[in-house]
Length: 93
Length: 320
Image (tube, rainbow over all chains, first blue to last red; front, side):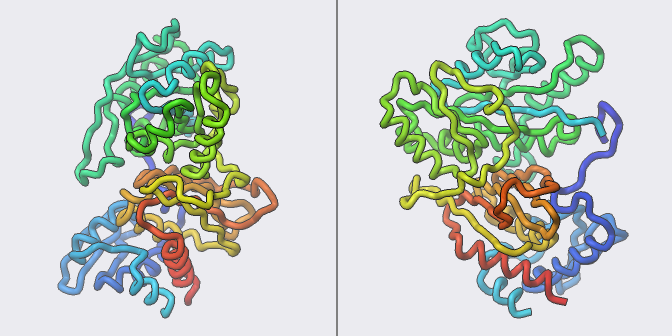
């Protein structure tokens, strides 16, 4: 909330102006990436994401900005998009 | 929502001529409705009714990342300017100029403008201007990490003291600066004189400048340009870039460019380490070249791996 004019404030740059359909698509695409690291993402009411590892540990994150830090903590290793295995997995389907 | 006020950041190493540039600039009639925030009041040496002084003070956030610190001093000052303007205690202003100290990292200033909730609602970064001294700039680029960072983050590079430097030295420095930061405009200032219209324009990308030198301009930095000749899925790009910046942000010093997302116009991207400006969707392309063009200024990251990775994320988005 802006203290001067009382307006609710911004969302993450990568999610700004996106509707419900794009959010569903984003979660599906994120799961293609996160599954490579043993993680799964769910959408909770279109407002927050719930990240889960295979042992059932979860983390709630608000946007893409917080997602990767939480994912790295759950996976216990860096999540690098330049990782050759990840790139091959995404290409291979 | 009310229009955000543009904030122009003037940075540059100690003695590189930023105060002279600022003083000359503020004497111009076009700069009449400008609030100015500086570190040293005495140095600017002009009587300006909206001149304010701050002590650089950073607030380290939880993740400990330097570029994601907030400049609490700047946020306080900007909020105070706003509330005093609202109360009618100071004249209205249409823009803010912020001069940093020579040792300041511009990234936290940008982060403050984009991430501090109240500030980001009322202000937006318009351009980062970095002054580089034609006499000492070459040496400072080698010796002073602050100078290098300021050059890489700039939207506009101003080579100063061209009146006292040899023409050849000015040209050599200019070529090196173009190689280091192909996303920046390059201007020259003699005795601090530069065209305000060129200096203060929004930090847009001039595609004609995207030519890289044959030899690396600095041992620690590898600028490269990705040209992509088909649309990139915007959702995939957002996932990819946020993931890249989360894992390699300290080494991705700059991302700037135009991205074809399959719409009539491109998306303008501008990021400094973890700090990304809200992307702007343009209605049309600025020239006949419809390819995506992204400038990366990075350390230890190769063009080939970035290109393959982005292509893989895009391919994943296009699979049913």
